Length: 169
Image 1 (cartoon, helix red, strand yellow):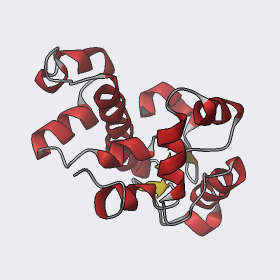
Image 2 (cartoon, one colour):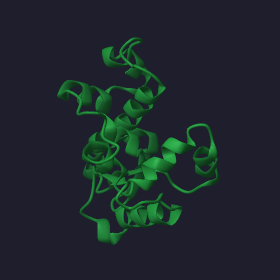
Image 3 (tube, helix red, strand yellow):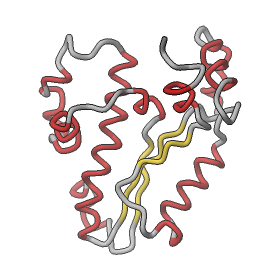
């Protein structure tokens, strides 16, 4: 990622990449798969055995793997960015109240999304301002020690998935 930005990334700079709560529903990957997702050149990713047809179960699994890749690639890039005195992190939001989310909440899968929010510890969706507040922390002086991290910002939906009412039976 650093070469993409060339000399734009300067000492004291910071970046935020948006991932997703969805990747937090995948079990941990073996270390070699995590490293491959984090470090394989973009043009070679689809040649990874773990991403070959038959290994990816469905579109949700593909989405989860792509978002896990975002977080892992940012973690790996944090090492390189750090050599330039810069920081980079990911935010993994849940459902954020936007026009698209409003359509999803009332669409064919809306009941599932609404239940997900209702049984989460926060009992509601994120707002764009809440995501922006975390981004401001990560990019500002108060976040100067934070790099290579992924911030799950889903109101506890993932907690409910692993340990609450949303847990797979």
